[in-house]
Image 1: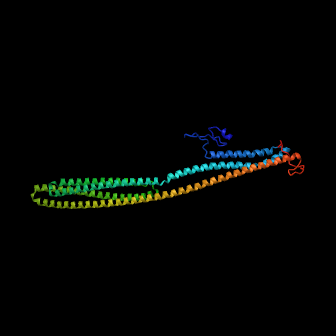
Image 2: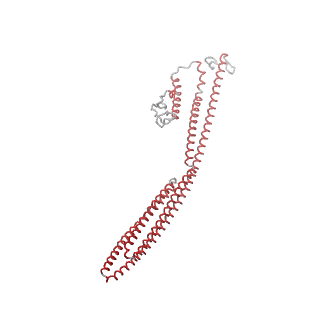
Image 3: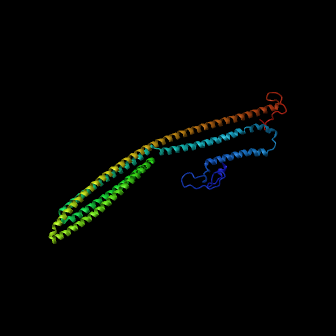
Length: 428
């Protein structure tokens, strides 16, 4: 204890260590030991106890090696030297008691910290609330995606209506040859606008699908096992969606090319009609030929109208199939999320059972440590009782010898021999 008292406040309190103690920025008790991990309060106490035991063991050896022959009256003190094992046992018992107290305190603190950590980590109510909130958020985003998809469907229908109006304009162009070019241009413009609307609707649908994927990813963030399955489903869905998008883009490019070619052909035909009309004005003999050419052009426009109607029906069927496929994917993803939630609940229950098992084992260890502490206390009491009995026995024997020495008799009442027990030095 003197070594600890003489240690500087800025140096380590571990015996024999002169390393500086780092200054702590946190409030509270300042640190007393250096940054070495083995220099702790418990190990410093053990080192001081070891040094005291070594000093106590070396002192009797030095006294024995440098002592002179004992005086005649020193024989009476030899029974007290026989009590050294009892004193050593008492020191060891005190050491064990201190160790048991420190270990019991550390074990109690560790058990409390483990109980709090496991309780927070395996709280089923918190985990279920977090998963339920993520699931509701995903459902809300899926509903928004469905609403946006319905809006795109309405716009597509509106585009189809505009396309029908363009077809009617084309039919009126057949009836009025003079206004055929203007009506054809309006039909082409309306078709391009409808395709632009369709492209924008597809882009919005793709954006909503991306938001849906993000919502599903957020929903499955707290579920480790379900996340892997959902990611696989998303990869497959993304691949299928990319393939479908590429196919739609290819078909759209082909349709645009066909429309451009058809527009060029219509313009060429209209130019031919203009030439025919000019020739009819200059040459009345070719009027019948121009009329026949106009009838042929009307037939071509009717065929174009039928082809456009077939394209509209095909696009409608493709849109219905795409919507059905997306709904099926959403249903499968909802089922996967529900399965992940069930697995998470089972995992939480298993972790809770493991925590309860660890808690029961820790309780058994604490009870066992308390039992060992009680046994050590009982052993210490027995050692102290034996020490007191030995001291009483030695004192009684010394008193008996002192009383028998003046009369020259043994304790049994006979005459004492020459080698009888000597008198105690200093009197009784």
